[in-house]
Length: 577
Image 1: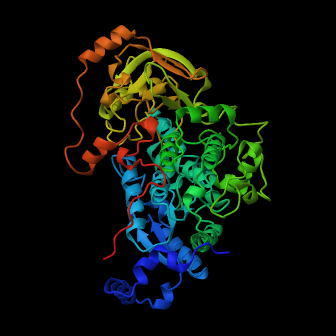
Image 2: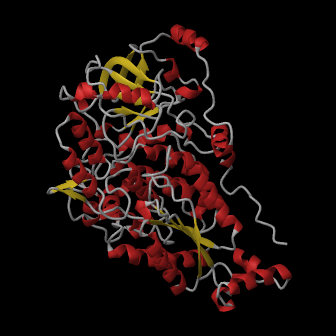
Image 3: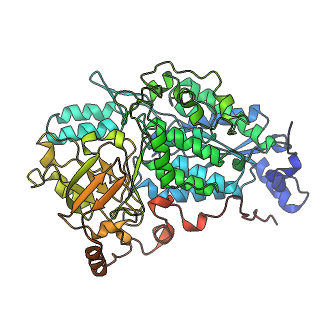
């Protein structure tokens, strides 16, 4: 039974008043060819579409938005497409992370300023999922998330390739001289061969899985390959459900609860999630008024093994295989009582009800808890005098021999400096060397780029080495692998301990005990701090200046401080005069 009446809809404030302003709204709608029958008595559904000509992950959104509109119309709603920033991970520089909060603000204000009652959020490429959800959470209207879906498996010369992961792997081989330029060109053309986001368990697949874990997608939606006809049917179903959610007044605070956030954490760990999950889920949880922190991630990791055998944590399969094996519904079914099955989802039903009938069809792709890919979850949070506010590593995606390691620091203060080091095949480094990149965090990057996936130095590649300990205050692509310690907080650019490290200082990494330290006394660190000079700000004007003044550190989710109100805090509805 409907809980709301048409008179209570936001859109009615625009379209129903018998005054000059109301007349203007109706007149301009009619200017576009619509008639009162199109909107009267109907929910207006905003479709936030992040399509652009520079967004390969979302190239199908021109088509999919039409399926969403079809669903909205089928359910008796009025669709209103609102384009938004596309944030192409492939092309936007210096990093899409610089603009995640901009898209979050745009999504929130698009919903607030237009005559809409509910929303469909269309995203998938890395930052679009958290950005859209953050903005929609702050606005508070009923919304449902439509994930772009992973692209098809890569293929070249009879081999299966995973976007990002195998690109990094074979680029090292190219640098080592083991593959030719012609072979590399073939890999370039075969590694990403359809629309859709990365088909490894990178940040895109991680964040859409988290969205489903939060209860914000239709059951199973995050696993459907972008090129599969099921994706079109799902898009229409999303449109229909968005209309029903408005009538039911199913607002996000009823869905994104502490229980749902706990489910998302568990799902993230079980999938072998990207390290970026830490930053984005923390940011989303704070927007929802149910904040989590690094310790919650580490606790979830110790309690939840990786059971999705998907690269880069897994050794063989990709998201297409995951879908055929049962998808995220199959994985959540395996997790059983590790999830709160009573959490409400966008369906209006519980998570448990949405998992009824879910099965696993290949238990090598989706492992049982008794036979995991890795005995703990995807991420480990490390602390110590090198990162007192925390750092993160992905233990399942690196050489286990490096989980406990000591070695001398070799420091690059910028990416150009790093490039000189890694391209010098005669650099006198040892296999124990710990390569450090600093001044690449939220303010130092600027925007915390994915420079933390530091290439293996040629000097070690030619000795047959394919992994080493690397530390940075930057991020790393979710498709990447290796013994990379990331998000060191506070960052070096604002005077974090990483700024005080010197070449040759011994660094001790201990993943089992969750520590990261430099063998430097407190007295020596105090002396170095007194000598440290803050660098010049990266920006003097524009959005970059706003970002630098207001972005929080990695352990807080890198949101803007002025956006962090309590969930449900009143932001005035726009006046209509």
